[in-house]
Length: 204
Figure 1 (tube, rainbow, N blue to C red):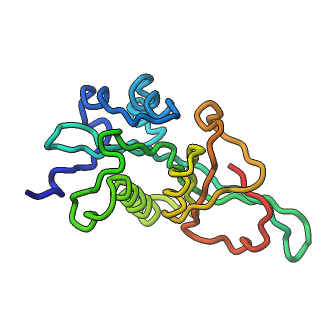
Figure 2: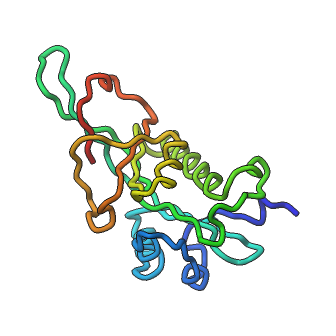
Figure 3: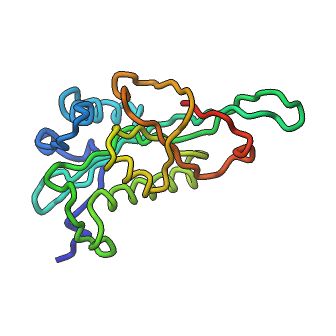
């Protein structure tokens, strides 16, 4: 059996509502399910071009394994200018992984796709997110950083840190306070800024 053909990544608009409605990530943050199902924001935002949502579909079982949503953002920080010795505020173009969730039936399960047999479905889908971001950066738009908000959970934080993300320290503001309340802002550089060593604070 060709497992690569069994699991397909496609736009949320390419799958039926029946598949969307049975997705359940069993997340302590209900916004993951609300965004995807109850409010249907994932579909609506995708249609309007406000965000892009991709789904990983198990075509054999006819269900959604997981999904992710990307949208534009910026990574801001303050540093002292080496010539003027004044505080400077700057911003890097960034992309935000605003949603990432795996259905409860696939959480912690090994992925049978070639090259991922010893890893979980979450690893496979997240690798695809990073590949997708690289395509965007190399083909469509400049991106210096990647940001996300992790639920305040040791397992989730460990997963993102394993993917190369770090927690952001200092003050920050959020665009969707009801969605990111009590979450941990994290970042990863695609290109390290020249003034990183002088940086004192990060914010969104």
